[in-house]
Length: 218
Image (cartoon, rainbow, N blue to C red; front, side):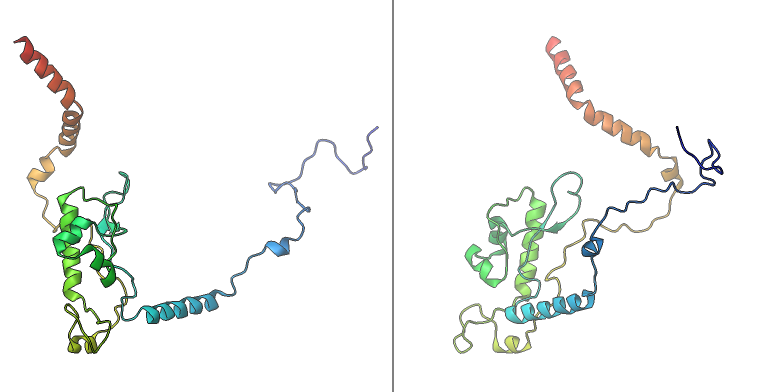
């Protein structure tokens, strides 16, 4: 037998479009898992003091650390961009006229594994090294005994610690100047040209093979 109240109507559901009651009352000690962020202001102050302490420890060197090269990231998805790499190659240092062992002592990162795959990257990083070298002020180990290559006393007195990037990473894109759209541009079927270029690239091997077979038969 099934017991029911007198006011229960069989087959009647909850009225209106409400959420079906399905509360979970089995979660205990939820207060222990609540994360707060009350130390946000204190953490901000601590980071600032840490930056100042680090800058004072490495002074008069730049706060950004070592000079890094400009490289292209791997994979097709990102290789159109530019970013800082690990270190300069031996070829780049040689083109800039910097000794590989001396480079690390004057704030230049060196990577013995990286190779220059193109003349553009070699030229770009060589120019980066030459620009850095022109602005470099080398402090002598002992003020009263300067060596060859050390800066003059007047430069040492005016030297200040550099804050921020040493040499910014150049943009990978060249800004194009605004131009007026002509009638010839509107009439040009660029989509068809792109499709034909893709087809020529894709069918290059097949066409070359057929052309060689035809020449051999003749």
